[in-house]
Image: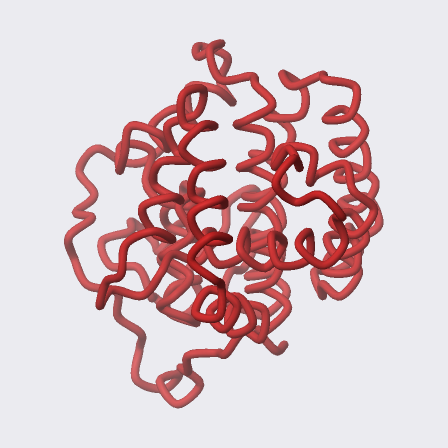
Length: 266
C-alpha cells in the first residue's frame, strides 16, 4: 500500500555521488515502431486505428492507444503504444489477410510468443529468471484456454515482480529483512528510504530512463480510470476486468517493461 501522506508531486532526485550514471537509454524496438508508424499508408493506418476503436467497447484503454496512434502530437507517443505497433508490424509481415486478422489473436501467435520469451531470456534479474519464464508461459496457456481471471491476476504480479528484481539486481533497491530500501535515495519523502509499493519502484526506474513513465501499467493506481483497477483486481475486490482484452493489454505492458529492463546494464 502507498502511504497517504506521501507527496507524489515532489520531483525525483538522486544523491550527487551517483549522478554521473544517469542516462536515457535508447530502445531499438521503439525506434522501429516509430519508423513503421511514419511509413504506414493511410489505409493501413486507418484500418489499425479502427480495430483499436472496436476493442475499446470492451476495454476503454484501447481508445487511449488509438488516440496515440491516430493523432499527431508534439508529446512522445506512449511506450506501450509503440510496442503494440512493433507487433502489428510483425503481423503485417506474417499474416496473409491482415484486414481480417483479429488483433486479440496476436498473443497466441508463435512470432509474438517467441519475441516475448526471447526478451525474458535476455533479462538479468538473478536466480528467479527460470521461474518467471515458466509463469509467463503458463499465462500464455491461460490466454489460449480463455482462463482470463488467472491470466490477468498473474500478469499484474509479474509486471511488478520482474521490475523489483531487476532494480535490486542492479543495485537500486536493497532488501533489508522483508523490505526494500531505495539505495540512492531517488524517491523523496520515504521514511527510512523504505520502498513500499509499485509507484515508488516506478519512480526509481524513471530515474534510469524518464521514458519509462510512459508505460501506463506502472502509473499510480488512481492515475486514470483504467489503471485505477490494478490494486482492486489483485486484491480481489474488482471482478469486472477478467477479460481477453485486459489480458491482451497486460501482455503488451509486460513486453514493454521487459524490453526496458534489457536496455539497463548491470
